[in-house]
Length: 265
Image (tube, rainbow, N blue to C red; front, side, top):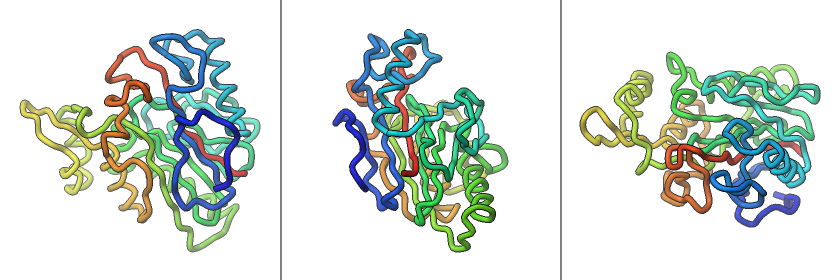
């Protein structure tokens, strides 16, 4: 990948074999002006932080990516936006895809999993906000499956590449040692695939520790994505376990949001 514009050294830049024109990054807490408990680069405008500070922080992000980050109103669903230059911020959705230069597919997270995707021809990119509800979806169709429907539609109309291959990068999220869930969460995944049971460790009393990144890797593999990079469910990727680096709603309740972006140059 070519070098990105200047940004805090603490931010994550995916190490993956994306085409040269595909750019991506994930922010951390570093680089903004918000004060505690949102310190410092809070990008969420819905968490109680001062609106002017949030706007300053978003400008920091926009300068770093040299593209327009399109912010969504994330609702833990499966709606996917196809970005265009006239699309305003604030549309209700949990994923975005685009083939246009200068628009950054952007998801905000503070325990949920950011998933960045691109095709190996460098024609289209997408970002998905994958909390457990969006990842599980309904009847086995969640936000990742919805992104692939969007990619398929683009490939048929705009790109026309019959042998499309997609690669994915998983960003930081709450880790398998911290994500305690109820039986209803496990049931939602196991009903779709018994393999999902491997991503849950019992705590007793119908409580489980869930591996959110592991569940996403299973879903991506089922979609034919064999090359998945980034979050391997290790402790260094856990938002709850790294308070100096990552925001975590589960840990702090009042928390900022980091963002993961992917765009075409």
